[in-house]
Image (cartoon, rainbow, N blue to C red; front, top):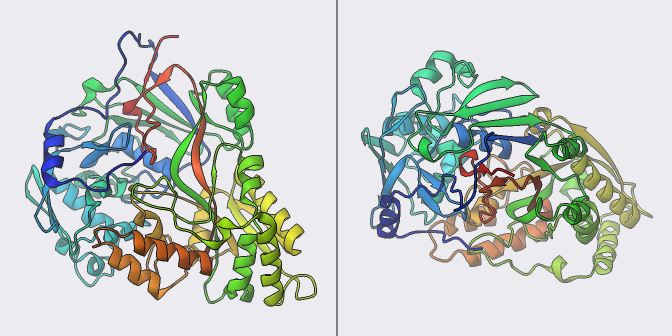
Amino acid sequence: MKIRTSLKATTAAALLLSGTAAFAANPMAGEVLADDQTFTYQEIDESPSIDPGLVEDVAGGVVVRDLFEGLLNQDENGNLIPGVAESYESSEDKLTWTFHLRDAKWSNGDPVTAGDFVYAWRRAASPELASPYSWYMSLMALVNVDAVLDGSMTSDQLGVEATDDHTLVVHLTQPLPYFAQMVTHGTTFPVPQKVVEEFGAEWTSPEHIVGNGAYVLTEHVPQERMVRERNSMYWDDAHTVINKVVTLIINDDAQALTRWQAGELDRANVPTGQYPTLHEQYPAEALSFPSLCTYYYNFNLREDAPAWEHDVRVRQALSLAVDRDIIVQNVTAGGQIPAYTFTPGATAGFVVPEVAAASMTQDERNAKAQELLAEAGYGPGGEPLSMTILYNTSEGHKNIAIAISQMWKTVLGVDAQIANEEWQTFLEDRNNGNFEISRAGWCGDYNEASTFLDLLTTNSGYNDSKWSNARVDELMAGAKTMDDPQGAYTEVEQIMAEEVPVLPIYHYTSVFMLHSDVKGWPVGNVQQNWSSKQLYKVAE
């Protein structure tokens, strides 16, 4: 499936003025709704934050989309549809974007205004908040954003303004053809200023939180459960069917599967490697479909990292020695796609470039890996090489790390230990460079290749390897204003394949168990930016 990376302003305005509620649940003719409209699902880890200005993980993004709503939404196929903004247009030079807001309310009954978006964007870009996603505001090319981020300008100089309560005007330094897609991300959602300022870090607790989404937070037991219930003040509450959403933190996928089979969960992860068996047993309920995400390992290229990490031949050897086919066929076994580039082929408008490793057999890769490692002075006949793979606690991540460590031992004689940490500690250690090799996964914030390739630019907030390549920075800066940036993206991927700052392993599929009475799941949206509002349950 392909989604257009841009909409002409006139077309976009006409689309949004139609006022369709495509984001809402849409029961089919003849379907009978179940009496109990409670949706219960598993997450492996609790998100560090559900504050739109601080959220940084996929699971947290799901909660934020339930509790808050941005300017635009995505329908079941990933197309842009109205959110708080009923329509929008851009200037001829694409440097000014104007969003026209509907009459919407916060869950406490206050009106949602353009000023709420201005406050949220200034807050997300402020050094005081120190958002892990503040770099995303820079990617949006807002006027003065980098000066605001580094503190040399005040946040009120950011290129966003409310000309009245229903009109938000955004000023860019360069035209971004995919800008409208970027405002579907949680970092751009509004937050209620008076609540944030009154309660500070506690403003997202159930007793204080005020949102503008289809649900409100009613219960939160840390590391155990989170409950959201219908928000009667939501502008489109009439098209919401699911009444209650329950997130359960279950680290063990096997345990979650047992609970799914017992009917305690509507959705659960598929334990690593069990998809083929489960799909045979539950053909309509064990799902696998393409997802806009990449699973990879980071090498630590900071100055104080071990010397072997700074030798490109070692990184190349380690990458070549990973048999990605074995990983996706025998370990994950959920239809994942072996990755030799960072950007998935499912990305709209992106053509996967040729890189040398992809056209080799695994025997050829192994032979080249051995040659490179020997040239670097490591392995049999050279200096022994050992390292540690760091991953966040999960049986699936553990199984992948074990498989890769065995491949490195067998092919290269490398001794790779594995170590796990709980999610928050893992994020902190990875961000601070307390690792040699670390597990990572990235899902596109919007459906365009730059959402992946910008990650490896020097100043990216999620460049956890701390790799820096001036040519990559130059190419990615230039690509933002190109009508067709594919040539730039191809060169960036080829540089990354040569330098190996990260080791792509596979491109994800969304693999999970979903009970057949749950309808409306947006399988056609490769970003999987789902919201509970899209779902409904039928009587069985």
